[in-house]
Image 1: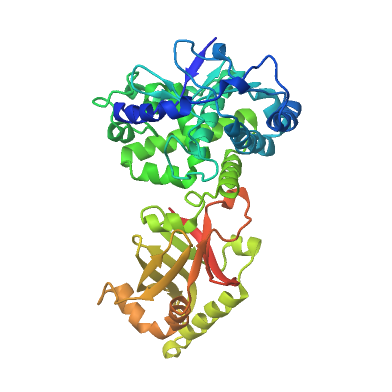
Image 2: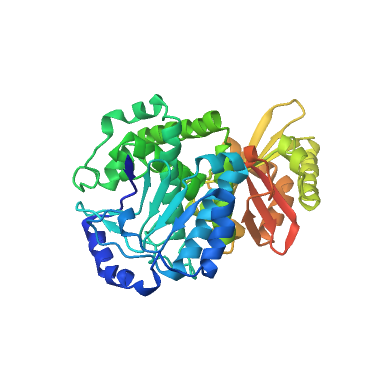
Length: 469
């Protein structure tokens, strides 16, 4: 039986930290864990109704020593952790695939046994195994006692997070589907010369090196099979924007490799399993947001505040998405006022065509007016602003600042048609806005591609447009 060892985190230092907590997570009352004679509990009933009966999946949480490596000290999972972790499995894995890929898909391919353990499975190389997939039919999850479900940590990483466990599950399930349909050969070729079995070696494979080589994690460098599973799991659980930012900040060569790997993963699920991978991403992210209060991967304001991912937002009234999703009549009136004012400047009959918000960094932007004269010649006018973004509340304020340029075409143009820009400037500087993905319910093809701002406490007063990353 082939076993895939997963997502082994940690340097030796982190391993030592884990060891200091080990006694706490090993302290479990075994008197309630006799699997031969027990009266079904409320948790057993919940598992039966939500997991076993509809999906034919057995959940083993009462201590079964022979279902893991008998040479290692492993503790049972605490009773109060069982239902919360299986709720995460149910909502963030089973139902997500069922919704996007269909009930038949998940009932056919999902592992038929989940085995839960409370402590980690510690390895001699200083890493911890958080999960394994065996024979395409069993997933074993470790280190569950440390998760705080009452106050779920939704930071982007960390071994004690709900997100981390979902990433483990999606990683392991990827191994299972890879046994059904092999990984496309083109994937291995992208980084073939750079795989390193000794991935925990801090000298040969520090995070900076694996990242520069185009790997989404240190562990991804261990083998192309792990690389494929890591890319899949990170795209689904960390999210598309996190992945894009990671790739963008990793260097040009690494960016190219990471995006090539992403494309193969997306095509793999689409072609061989008829699963819209982008829609699956969206569903997993929805669960993290609605069930666990995740704002990091979900918040437009959060990614705007990072300052290095979203480069621009364009507002062109002729774009198809406005016909599809509609516009705000209140902002339409502002845009029309600006259009009238631009035409009135010098009675020259200029035509305002579109606006662009060009984000220079986390605090600075240029608002650009695109317009043409009566002869049809096209012009741009740049107006300099600063912005303050609260990534937690989503609140954004815009402040007009001194022009960042002068005596050049776009800056001179800004002075010439300044009166035409006044309605836009007054609108931006007189309100507190909320940054958000607008509109709220878009088709998959537009997901994370449209964003905008609405006036705080006035949700029908908003503007949005296509985003450039």
